Length: 242
Image (cartoon, rainbow, N blue to C red; front, side, top):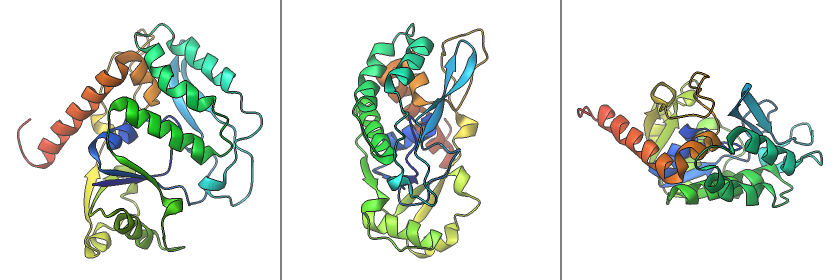
């Protein structure tokens, strides 16, 4: 099974689940970079509520994700201090940062390289075995959304596509199926797990960066949370009582 997604910065749990349950995860990095997306930012929970963590990107019209350069203004120390202020009292803060900190301090020049490195570290911390590939290294057609998705699957040697619900607006399952690729829809947000969060006087906040869950649960605890949720969802799709 394959999952295809633009490389996100410290992604949410829906992305991390795919690292555990798919054989291949493709970072779709040869498409246009868009401001205001998830490639260079994500959300954490702080004493004051939700806050964005952002990696500034140098502006260049029409650049692809794999061409986007991290701006000189990027200050890893400031970002790490923000994480420390939010999570230093959580039980698994040190364990979480051991995976994240070396990447943020590695001096990456390209955003896609930073994200690929982070996702590799997160995959390994979770004990996942999925292959991480980048679409920019694949022989894909220059245009045609469906044609490109099919080509990604074929290049990776996969015939089942784990498709996020956000792709329903453009992913023609019949057209993909005609190429011999089965589509399984992943409705993640409605089944987003609830777990203990810091700042408990605030209501539970879903769809935060993986850093939030990892700091509160640890990588092993997060792995269990995600795999149990997937098993339950899979049973539901197959019509088996959970």
